[in-house]
Structure formats: structure tokens, C-alpha cells
Length: 130
Image (cartoon, rainbow, N blue to C red; front, side, top):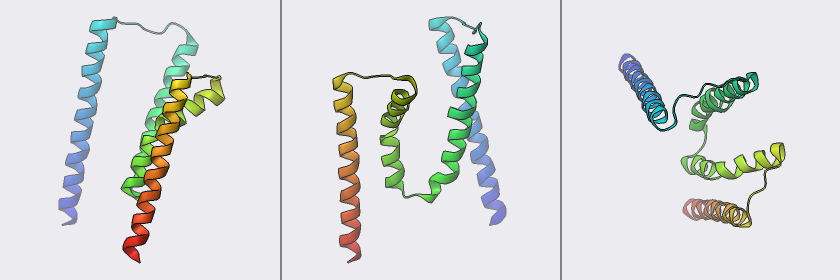
């Protein structure tokens, strides 16, 4: 059974790798067709690309996959729903980016929905356990 699970895990890992590489190739081709090839010319551009590749992609997704199993599915969904808001807060703090009033109202509505949904789930869990 252990060997069977290990084989299944290896098959899934290979499949994920193939999907990932296929996605890269597909979007690279589409991007090249519509935008042409643009290679960054300044060191600061390369630093930005490397930084984003390592921290925002590799490390973030690795940690997400590693620890996502330790939380309940609805909590993970709530966190993902709030991701654009956390992204904007980071941009606001680090870059001073300010959105329109409509965008802030939208962010408020998203947070309100997340908080109200979380409260309904907690209330439902309390009712079912009692």
C-alpha cells in the first residue's frame, strides 16, 4: 500500500510538472505573438524579475502547498478571497499606491463578505456541536 501511494504521488508530481511546463510554453508563445520579445536591459529589471521569481513564486507557493493542509478548506478559501486586498495593502504601504473610491468600496465589500461568511460558518459549527 505504501508503494502504491508513493507511485501515485510520483505520477501526480510528474503530471503537475508537465502541466506547469506546458503552461509556461503556451503563455510564452501567446505573449511572443502579441507583444514580441522584450529582454530587460537594465540590472534593476533583472533584479526585479529574479526577486519576484524567487520570493513571490517559488517560496510563496512552496509554503502555501506545505501548510495549506493544516487549515480547514473554508479558511483557505477565505484567505484566497482576501489576497487582492492584502496585495493592495502591501502596495499602499511599500509604494504609496492609492486606488479609486470604487476600488476601496469593492475591497470593503469583499472583507465584509469574508467576515460575515466566517461568522456564519462558526455559528453553524457551534449549533451542530451543541
